[in-house]
Image (cartoon, rainbow, N blue to C red; front, top):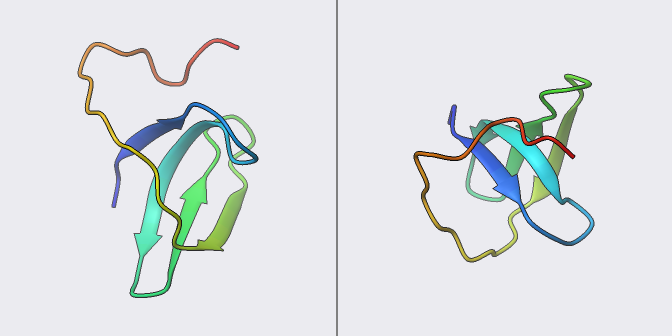
Length: 58
């Protein structure tokens, strides 16, 4: 929780902050609109980068 992530493609692409994770669902917050969304777990390839801007300029 608290991680700042960027999803590069797909219907959830963009910048997100991880708010909550449980066994079946997780909740993400948009840093621009501050809206929160809850989804079932999904799988993505993850790469940690310390030098990336966040939120990204689109």
